[in-house]
Length: 150
Image (tube, rainbow, N blue to C red; front, side, top):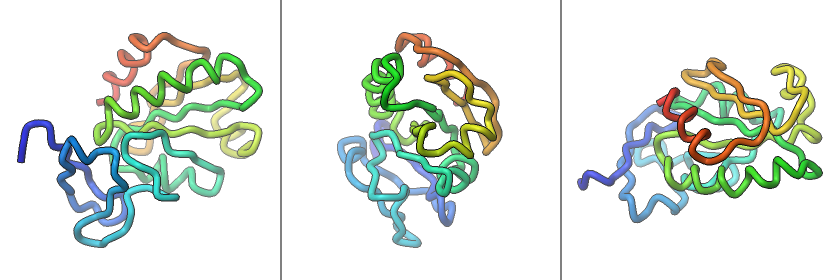
């Protein structure tokens, strides 16, 4: 084990899994229950697409912190935030799950969390909403907010 290895709990069975840093982009499968860490074969270092149906599993039941980007394809500021979130997903792989919710296609979850403007970032820790930020932010400010949930 090296200091750069990631220790990631399985979202299904809770078993802690060691992921070598140089393999963080691979599809992760739990060593105990053999289930993938995320739905759809998503990799650890990319944002996870969330739907109304997968929201509870991907966000509320996730054992670690989650940043949920509420966005829509027609939103210019949302598109400008997307590459920054991709970067943050790579940099915080195994520490924070970055997730994306298309509010046009998933209106129930957007309604449940009173999303009235996009982009909106929702910060969850232990399945509880602990912070929200409306509007596009520069990367250093997003990192500051992420550090508050670590």
